[in-house]
Structures are given as C-alpha cells and as structure tokens.
Image 1 (spheres, one colour):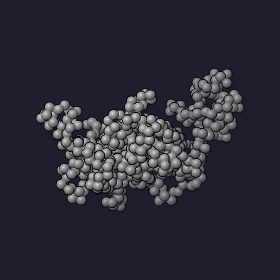
Image 2 (tube, one colour):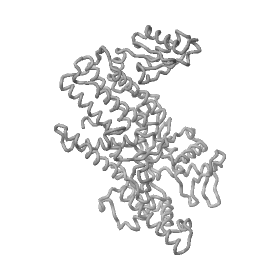
Image 3 (tube, helix red, strand yellow):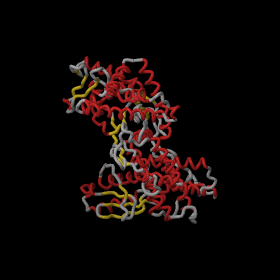
Image 4 (cartoon, helix red, strand yellow):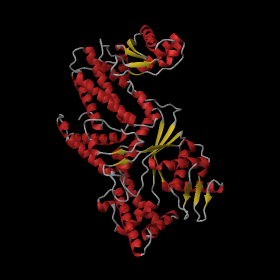
Length: 597
C-alpha cells in the first residue's frame, strides 16, 4: 500500500473507534508554511465528534500517535486542520518499495482487461504530415501508452484517407504539370512531391476562378463550381469509384510514393500502428450500411439522388451521406470503418484522436451508428484536441504554408545539437555518432514534451526556440536532470557504492527529502488520473515538478560526499528512484531519455 493510503487507512480506523464513523478519508499535502507532510481536514467530522475543530484534530492526532505503529511521529493542529509528520522508517520503507518495483505506477494487464482501440494520425495521401499531424500522432501514441500503463489491452489504429476529391486534385495536377516527375527523379520524399502538386492544383484553380469572374462576369461561388479543373477532379473521382483502370493505376502508384514518405516520418516520430485501415477499402462498407438505412427509412433520398440523415429531432441538422453522383463523404467512410473494426476486434472502448474542429462530426457519427443498430454507437469517445498555432498564425495546406513535420524534426535536432554542444563536448570519449544521437534524443524530447505538456483540449502556440531551452518547463530541462542523476549513479558504482535491497533507516530526514519521496509516491495516482481524464499532460507536468524538486534537493544536499553512510545510501536510492520514475513517465509520453549529455 502507498504510504498516503496507509496513513489514510489509519485515520479511517481512528474515526471508526472515536466517533463510530465508517468513512474513507482523503488526505492532502500539508501546506509549506506548516510542519508535516499530510493534512486531514476535520470539519466533516465535527457533527460526530461534538467538539471544536481544533479539539477534534488533537483528539484524532493523539489517537494516531498511540495506534499507528509509529507511522505518525507527531502532529500539529491548526484550527480544523490536522497536520501529520510521518516517521523516518515509514519514508524509508516507502522509498524502498518504489525503488524495488521496476513497474512502479503501472497496472499489469489481466485476462479480463478491457480492449481499447485508439485511432490517431488519419493522414490524407495528398500531402505530407505537418505540425498538426505531429500533435495528433504524439497525443495518440501517449494516450495508448497511458491506457496500457493502466492495465488495458490496446490496439493502435490509423485510417488513411486515400480517396476523395482532395486526392484527385493532386493526381490531376501531376498529370497536367508533372512531366513524369517521381521521387527518384526529383530527390523528394514521395509525400512531399504529391503535396507540391496539391498546392499547384490550388494555385491554378484559383487562377481559373479569377479568370471566370473577370472575363465572364460570374460570381465567385459559380466560378468555383464552373472552373474546368474542379470539374475534371470530380469526373476523376467518379471514374475512380467506377474502378477505371487508368485512374486506379495512377492512384495506386502515387499513393505508394506517399506511404513510403509517411513511414519515414512515423519512424522519426517514434510512433507506429497495430492495424492500418484505408478509406478506399472501408467506404464501400459505409455505402452499404447507408443504403440499408435508406431502405429501413432511417435516411431519405432527395430529388437530386443524394442521401441524407435528418437529425433535427436530436437538436442537430440534416447530414449528407451520399452525394447526388453516388460518391461517399467522410461520414460514410467512418461508418464503414467502425463496422469493420468491431468485426475485427472485441473492442470495449473506441477512442478517436481527432481535432476539435470535428466535434460535430463525431457527435453525428455516434448518433448514426446508434440509429443503424450498432450497440457500441453511443459509447464512442472523441478525444478532442485543440489546434496548433504558430507565432505568425494558422497553417493552410493548400497554400503551402504549413510547418512540415520532416522539416520540424530536422530543425529540432539541429537546434539541440547547437544548444547542447557545450555540455556534450565535456563528455569523455564522446564519438560523433553518440553526439548526433544525443542531439536527436534531446531535439525530439523537446518537441514531444512541449506539445504534450499542454492540456490536449486547449489550442497551443508552438515555439521551437522556447521548447529547446534547458531551463523552465521543457523537455531538455528534464532530460538533463535525468542524465545528471545517471552520472551520479555511475560514479557511485565506480566507487563501490551499491544500493542494498533493504535500505538502512537514517536517524532523520530533511523536509526536502521527505517531500521528494512523497512526490515519488504520487506517480501511480498521476498515471491513473491520466487515463481517467484522457490527459497525458498531467504526466508531463508531474515529471517536470519531480525533477524541479530533485534539483532543489541536489542543490542543498550532498549525495556522494555525505559522510553519514545511512543518509548517503538513502540519497543514492532517492536519486535512483527519481531517475526511474522520470524514465517511466517520459516513456509513457513516448520520450526517450539519454544516459549522458
């Protein structure tokens, strides 16, 4: 049992014996201006005690002094607050339990553990991954790790949007303006090459729209519909859905270029998937279910042949499911994908990691799946996250103003190499390969931490310069502290100082030492809370608070040069436990830690 839980159990027994109360109590950390580590608020028990707040606190404190087996060493009562000082032996035992459990904070999976499927990434094959995708992938990967840390079975999935009008735009632009260019002839990653043609389509399309407005006097909306390029793109989409061999062959070839590019980016980000679904393989299942719903009267067909869902009774509006030409929309694809996933896996929980601009989409999807008779329709969870903004505004893919994921990864690694060069150069026997690896770990750690420390529900401003700083709430600050601790432990081992399995109890502990052990003991609670709230950021900020507190301890107390062997052993164990929990916490976030830097 965690120390806080043990003390809380003692308090529950006290309340039962003193006042006949059968309650579970919650303890909180003692405020820094008071002596003690844990505080009990006694106001809820005054009716049963029939005493003043301070008298009640003292009565409970006296009981704990004589009946907690030494766990409570002393107390002080301040009005209705009972502040408890925990015995040194208890803190030592707590640290020993943390240090001795390699999976501390994690729940081991059981045969009855729920299966959670998490969908993230969801790229389009008409452009490379950008900063928005980076946040999506990092959140999805971290959330999957959070659920696994809480004992769930997890299946990580991706749905690739490999069909639709946006894909046809890139294909058409390549046919018109590409002159047979390939990744091999251009030296570009395939996803970048195709993205260039998506931008080229938009540029030529806007030129056509402008010309129609100026030369034929069309209004903008009419010109957008009548522009030859957009008409050709829609014709290509119809041909694709009809299985036209020429269109399908080109589509397959260009998608393969993109997939090769995506794979490189995913590897650099450190994310992967257990199962990848493709819209081109799921949309027909969706169309089939929509047509079944049409036959059952769940949906209706308009005069132009399009199929709609009327959701006004649910307080929403009408939703298009099939266009007049018979082509499907995103909603259709998502219905088909959901059907296939629940056929493939015995899913207990389905979580979609998608930006908050799609909140309405998933509200509608849940209702439609429920209407179609899928029992799990109402149980879908949309892990809705905010947009990533830049100092100069939002990103636009079709205008080519995005922050490319590959460029960002390269820049972060380069910046990390520059900023950490003075630290790395002081390392003995450092090889160029190791220096590059440290730069990669630090750069990616900076990127990932900066994104994951922010509550996913909030919009965020990404600032590369701020993220790479070695001071403040940043990844490099945490990684450097970890590497410093590992250096201390290596020196201790070189001096023959090894940690025993049973820690000796020192004569006393400083408030900073007990506070640090207490903070370590919060890790299991933080991991559980991250799963309950679908919030990886609480783990990120816990790691920052932990290393900040360790640095304050390290500044005030010697570790290796402490003459009292019992205190030195405990401080080494404390350092080791901090490094272990930091590695575990950062690992849940998908962040590697360097053994030296």
